[in-house]
Length: 281
Image 1 (spheres, one colour):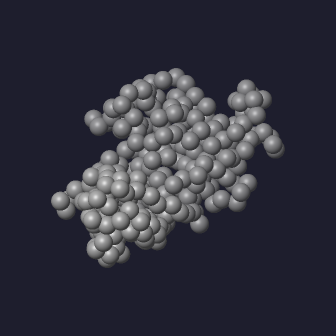
Image 2 (cartoon, one colour):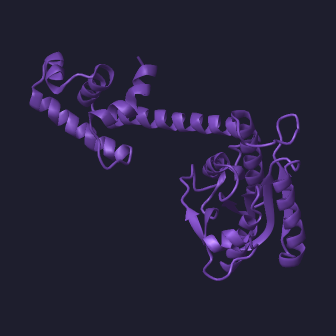
C-alpha cells in the first residue's frame, strides 16, 4: 500500500529524513512526505526546508516532498505555534492533510517528533478521528551522537521508530465514509460527540426499557435519579432489603452484558443512565 509521511519540521530537518529512512527499512512504500512548517521568515526554518529540498532529489528520488506552511485564517504564515489561535489553525492543517491522504486510500505515517508539543497533541487527536488500523503514529528515539552531528541519515543502531498507540473512534476511517464532510476538525469532533451521545442514549434506552423487568426498573430509577440506598429503596417500594438486593444484582448482571463491562455497580448505572432519565423525566 502506498503511504505518506506527515511530519512537522522546525530547526531539525534530520527528523524528517531519519523517519523516512527507518520507514523504508521496514519496507514501507512511502511516496510523499508532507512537511509542516511555520513562516520561512525564520532563518532556522528556512534553512531546514532548503536542506530538505536539496536532499530529496539525491536520496529520495521516488518520494515527493511537499512543504506546507502553517497559516492563519487570512493566509498569513504563522511565526510560531505558541497561542491558542495558532494551535487551532495548525490543527486544521494537520486534519486536512491526513483526511486528504485517507481519501486517496493511502496509509498515513504521522511523526510527532520535532516541532511544538502542541502539534504532537493535535496530531494525536487528528489520528483518533481519521486513522484506521493501517495507519501509524511514530516517535523517534535517537542517540545523542546522531542529534549532535545533525546528520540527515542515521548509522545502524543510532535511531529507532517507537510506535505510539492510538485509541481510534472506529475500525474504519471516517474519512472514507460520509461521516466527516467538513474540513474543520472542530466540526468533526462535535459530530463525533453527537454520534457517541446518540449511541449511548440508544443503548441506555434499550437497557432500561427492554432488558430490565418492571421491578428492576423501579429500583434502578431510584438509584440513578435520587441516589437512594438499598434500605431507602426497600422502604420506598415496600419491599425487603433482600429483594432489593436481588433486583440490583440482576440489573448489574444485565448491565455488564448490555454495555460489555467487566464490572457494574450503582455508580456505573448512574453514569450510564443519568442522561436517559433526565431526558425522560
